[in-house]
Amino acid sequence: MDDKILTADKATAELISKAKNDGVETVWDRQQIMKAPCGFGEKGLCCRLCAMGPCRISPTPGKGAQKGLCGATADVIVSRNLARMVAAGTSAHSDHGRSIAHVLHMASKDGNYTVKDERKLLEVAKRLGIETENKDMFDLAHEVAEYALNEYGKPFGKLTIPPSVPEQRRKLWEKLDIVPRAIDREVVAIMHSTHMGCMADAESLITMSLRTALADGYGGSYMGTEISDILFGTPVARSTEANLGVLEHNAVNIILHGHEPALSEMIVLAADDAELLKLVKEVGAEGINVTGMCCTGNEVMMRHGVKIAGNFLQQELAVITGAVEAVVVDVQCIFPALPELAEAYHTKFITTSPKARITGATHIEFDEATAYESAKNIVREAILNYKNRNKEKVFIPGSKNHATVGFSNRTIINHLDKVVNSHIDPTGTFKPLADCLTSGVLRGAVGVVGCNNPKKVHDQSMIEIIKTMIANDIIVVATGCAAQAAAKAGLLSKDARRLAGKGLATVCELVDIPPVLHMGSCVDISRIMELVGEVAKLLGVDNCDLPVVGIAPEWMSEKAVAIGHYVVASGIDTWLGITPPIMGSEEVVDILTNRIEEMVGAKFFIEEDPMKASRQMIERIELKRRRLDKKM
Ligand code: SF4
Ligand code: WCC
Ligand code: FE2
Image (cartoon, rainbow, N blue to C red; front, top):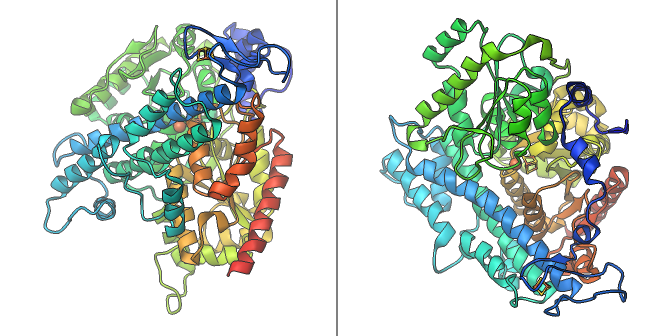
């Protein structure tokens, strides 16, 4: 590895050097060996959908193969590949939502899972049209769970769209025929239509992708969020810390990595178990330090203040600290490299989900029916492993930063209510926020979301963009690994107000919030969609009329592609900081970055340079402001 700058994060840089000294490899080493990515794949021009191929189209128009054996053009191949990314991303979020719905279905008074937020249960039941009067709370919970599970496979009808979607938007979706049917059906529809010899029209494939993505955003992800809130509580503001410096020298360090809170919630509980704490004493440790990574980290951080060890590209580095007794994972965003790496240290790498078994891992299957016992077994393994820690191999970086997190919409409203003059305005709404936007105290809002990607300097784009936005009085909401980058950089602390423009700083002061609001995990982008929709409704406009944009500066996963599609379909312009594999088709690029705006009032922007992207976003926000002024 040469000495080119790989990360904006000091702890990360320190551990990359340690990896070198320890003689272990990381993603950046493998990137070097991989050299440049495959040019055909990078442009989306490789098709292996049938065994007459694989076929690849020449990236130079007019030169070399211009069609696959079946006659599929670049436009067809690129749009089919993209649609499959949307289907895969939607399936990941939605299967997560389904698991949580199953957990709600088994919730009971004395069981492993109960209902922590009855108010939320009633709200969700109401929105689904379920009778709530005189019902036992658990009966109601099971009914909501069943309703949710039926949304996956109902044979007739359409997805129940949440009331936060403005009426104009809902009508537009109906007109475009992109209101999803059952969630699973939309995923299957794409798999079918992209099978060899089926759909061969780029525009139709993109339209299908929008419909499938909406099944994610307003179906699977939305339910993932709502049901997690019912089961584990709607997040409230709390303080925590972030970065690898949260690991402790004298405690049993456990890293929770993955996505679904059913597992991580139980581990957090089990880490307080009296019997296990006794065992901790016996092995000579001072306590159990549960920390999080990626979205499952976000889930328990939002609800319990569990500290964040790092984001996506730091998963290997956590092991390389030599201070981690167990990395416990469930599904998604987990490097298959981890078991081999863990071998080089004392770390136990524990898989728990039948959906994500990894060769070389210790598999302790997490069973929801006996969740607490399963969690205890997992934590016990970690504790027993403490004695194997080699103190000479340990390096815990000093970096960590303070963060205020937990901004669910209910929490945002509670904060806004502090400034409401209740003689004039009703409390309990986003009205003060809408007023700040229309008056121009806040110029706009931007969602900064998504992953890390070693194609870019780790965390750098996210931090630059967030800093530029808040300096320009644009409030930032963040989820996923982007929110963790912000936390590590200190941008989620109330102190970060000093980096904000005058308008935003004043708002932060008045309502006691940081300039960047951590709204949760990736499925919690549904919270952002709800927020945007409610503000639009208050102003009597559609989402696309608001000075609001979204960006995934360092995205890598198929889930991000699905998210991008439902955000654009919702009327919100979306920037991609990593070029998606579509550049092989002028037609697909033209639809996504141009013509789609005529359909849904928003489009994609592809811009890898964070400063250029920031300028474009500000321009767009100001343009929307001028248009909105005329409307109001
Ligand atoms: Fe080639 Fe067409 Fe088969 Fe794709 S579907 S591999 S382009 S023949
Ligand atoms: Ni969501 Fe991206 Fe992190 Fe995984 S956890 S790496 S999809 S942002
Ligand atoms: Fe995630």
